[in-house]
Amino acid sequence: MSPPLHRQSAAELAREIRAGDRSITTVIDETLARIRARNDRTNAFVTVTADRARDAAVEAEQALADGEPCGPLHGVPIAIKDLDDVEGIRTTSGSLLFNDNIAERTDPFAQRLIDAGAIVVGKTNTPEFGLGCTTHNRVAGSTGTPFNPDYIAGGSSGGAAAALADGLVPLAQGSDTGGSIRTPASCCGVFGFKPTFGRVPIADTRNAYSHHTPFSHIGPLARTVEDAALMLDVMAGDHPADPFSLPTPTQSYTDAIHESINDLSIAYSPDLGVYPVADSVRTLVGDAVDAFDTAGATVEHADPEFGLTNEEILDAYYTFATVLWEGLLDGLTEDGLDPRGDNRDQLTDSTIETILNADSVSTQALTAAQRVRTQVLEGMTELFDEYDLLVCPTLGVPPFEIGELPTEVAGESIEPRRGWLLTQPFNMTGQPVGTLPAGLTDDGLPVGFQLVGPRLAEETVLAASAAYERVQPWQDRYPA
Image (cartoon, rainbow, N blue to C red; front, top):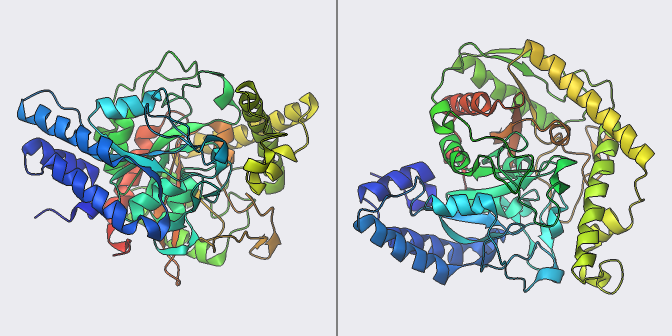
């Protein structure tokens, strides 16, 4: 007997639809009903495209009845992050500047998902322009984790992760420029995957090179590793609009998840050698790592040698990010908006603080930041000369209350906005990284850990993630 729809995996659902065991129109109706009933808990969705989804379901059901070829996601509901475009659907980017903006194009990854049969049921919440590690904006408000909606869902793909953990959709897409897939995956107890930079194309029609520094990634979030692999199989591959896009993989990622990890060596670093980490996080991640031993891998304690403090790494990240963010505002100016003047009052305080109040970046500062980035790369390269994978916490803290920011972790003062993340180094290197659920704190809040691979090693990361899931499944932890 199939599990209830809100706990069924996308892969199982797709198989049942193809076999004629589930009606697509019923699936979409039940999905929309659950969103209506529960979205107020977490505020995961900004826009719900009910009529459009129902029309797509009717067409998909007819195509199946007519014996037409069906893609691997035929009839499966999916959510798209509200930073990204699907033609004819509102994209607010979490900003009052775009409250009524209707997309005129579809991003390549989204078109691939639609072409594979997925049915878009709506857009998920994100901080303004994705500039945040928690999800709040003036268009839709804050998103909370389903485990306790008063606590953060993380950001910037917070709506996507919350929608999954609360059983609103089986698949959701995220983007990650500093941890925006991995942070919410950790806060909501789901699997999030940031593939190698360029694996999933990003098509910016204004500036095709904007997502290079720091490395920006599009990737899947899901409740199972198989679902994420299936989604990545659809999204990955070269695209002419993205000069950094990588060739289409020769191996299926869904095949990779069945590979043995008996010969893998895994380095476990409880803090990357330089980050403060709360005791509760250290304990849960340390216990979770044992599952890799059980699955057949060899695990040893080892830290990457960066030769840097966490503050130096974060400062370099901010240098890169400020260049990216300033370019964002320049693009808005080209569109006739004035974010630095007449439209400033429509921006959130955090956007103003992050971009408008930031010092301009000099070429000297950018060069210094690139040297830091190179040291991070060298540290990871040396580590992967000895090990196949690296495990470390995703965040230094469990989820905290909405509206609050931590000022210290484990007795060490931190920069409140991003000092509690261990994610930014891997946006400097562009390596594939998954975040997996480690467990729940005594307060019932999720904690996740990162599984990092060398560049282009998606198959290895996914195989190890699936092996961990088989030993330590997490699907029964989600709120009822």
